[in-house]
Length: 260
Image 1 (spheres, rainbow, N blue to C red):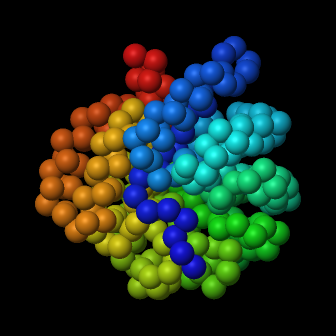
Image 2 (image 1 turned 90 degrees about the vertical axis):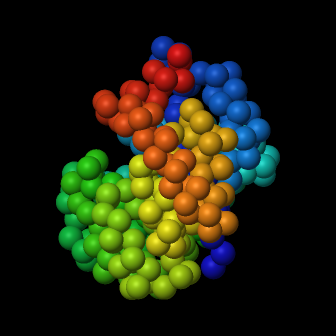
């Protein structure tokens, strides 16, 4: 399997006007991202506030993004849920709308067992024909996906890798060892982009790139070119803004920053 993308992917915010998605502002964000050379966009992820959007809003936004982008970058739809059948339905609809891949958060609140996680993810991947990325974010879901689950998912033809936001850099090496080089890893934390890529990660699914897409493209490009000393210096310089973007629950700070 080829990676869905390499380099910088933005976990895009969803601008609202009262109770509706602000499409005009959203299109301005899309233009800026593509002008910066972003490799992919995650639509309706955590940063996009999918948990508080209706199914109609989510699917309308995914379809709009696919139509607007027109293949200029990859569009990855956030279709995860703690309700397996619901996630299957959203995933199938996103595929019909033309999404290039799916980002599937682990079942939140349920606190699934290892066998339950494998069953949940497999049930979704069995019903679609586009690449699936598992999303491990234990600070949100209450469960840290174990490496053994990744090993099982790596055997599924539709699972291409993981967005790892658990904060354990050592786990990246363990995933590589257990799953091999064709189960791709992307950092889910902006403050760990360089170490994750140094251990074989292919890029980052970033909050920071909502604000500074050109900079995150440059950062990941340095890593992909093996220029880790320069990348480390840039990562260090970005830490104050990264820390500021997580001073409150995401996406509150990044939306405030975008407004400014």
